[in-house]
Structure formats: structure tokens, C-alpha cells
Length: 177
Image (cartoon, rainbow, N blue to C red; front, side, top):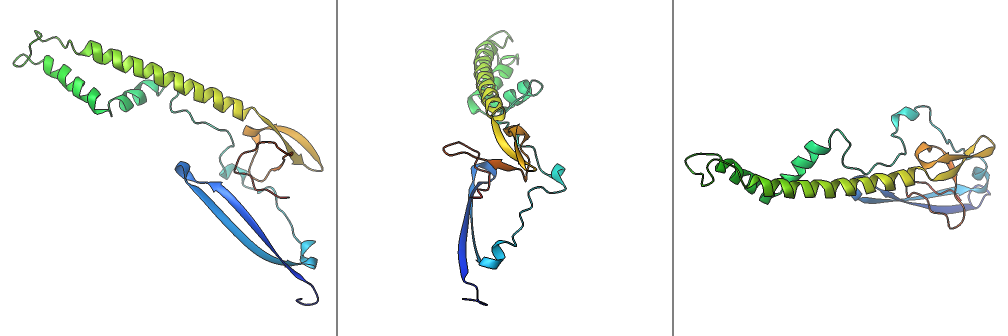
């Protein structure tokens, strides 16, 4: 008993995803008296919302403008592709060529690069479809005294989201029970 009030100890455990897939856990322990329970104030929205990124998920590597340069850069990071490119350049040099200056190795190299690019494009389109499905899911957000339905991509920092039993939700929410 402190000052005539019994003290309670509560623990708040938050599991968060950090940058580049790292995980971080925070453990908060706090004491409060019964009289302090009614004095707590939760500030749901901050004034400077533009400082925070949007809640829209995007896991794609490419867009239509950057696909060719980024994909070529990614393909030529692989040592065998660089090797065959060097061979193609060497086939054009008259002193060492055995193909009359024609880079005949470019056709198989171009085929391998094209197949890899098509595979990467299909994978990226699947990621984009998955991102859109996740962004278009709805949730209920407390606005004033009532609830409104929002898309997950429209949820902002400070929104109070209602989660029902056995409903999936992103890991970056703070659970208040």
C-alpha cells in the first residue's frame, strides 16, 4: 500500500519488425495506483501525420521504367553472365577471333537473359498482385464516437483499429485490451 492505494504492476510486451527483416521486442513494465487509472490519457493522432510513411505495402522490385536497367544489372551480377559477355566482346577482336569477328555467343547469352527477365517479371507481377490484395483488405477504425470502414492502405499512425476475435491483422499494431 502506497498512500492508501494498492499499487499494481502491469507489463506491456510489443513485438515489432525492424528494417531488413530484423525483429525487435520491447518490454515495458509500469506501476500505477487505482486513482491513476482514471487519469490516463491516450493520444491517438499526432499533428504531423505527413512525417510518417503511408501504410501501403509494396514489395515489388521493379516498375515499368526501371525493369530493364535493374534487371540487366541484376543479371550481370552473376559471374557466368559476365564471363559470356567478355567472350562475346573477345569474339569481335580480329587478332583472337575464330568466328570471323561475329559474336556468336551473344545469341545463347541473350536467350538466357530473356528467360531470366521473363521469370523475374512474372514473380514481380505476382508480388504486385499480392500487395494489392493486402492493401485492399478492410478494417474498422474508430472515428469520433463511432466506427468507419477503411482500407488497410489508408490506416494512419495513431488510428485506433478494432480487431475481432480470430481476425488477422498486421504485426505493427499496438494491442490495447
